[in-house]
Length: 216
Image (cartoon, rainbow, N blue to C red; front, side, top):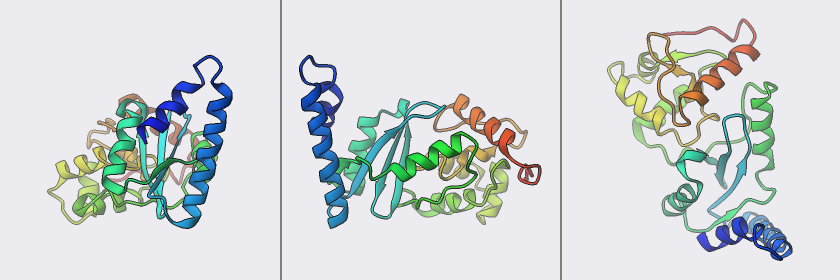
């Protein structure tokens, strides 16, 4: 798959190769759509522009399995998904347009939840339990790491909650950015501290007063 990605990314910059690259992109999109319909595609992926930088969105037939930030290295993320979720990986074409639209609406403050399915196969054990608790935090609200640990049934596992947030495979869709330190400071984030602060500020500005309740 690396060779295909290299052609798609480099071809447009090579003199006289723009038409060939466009043809290759259309062929890849058609292959991705056909493989998805036939159930022979393990992972499909695309990039989405956002106020916190470009995002890689990857999905299995069960739902979105990965949202990655640019500093994670998109090629490395795709290669990791091929190892962990299956080797049949293709660019998504238009098959992830619904995810892109929901992300656009979220970043514009027009959406406070996601309807697209998430595939949490990359999260196991207690980390998966934590992600389930994160999905319960309302838009515009925050919870402390200690509060999430208690909600997950392990009050002493504050550090493990931090690890679960740091390794959340689908940030934004599963809102680990809503988990902050007990002193109210934002804490670390897979997308970086600036991205977390931007997300919290955006939600705070867009949320209704009822949404803004924060808890322990």
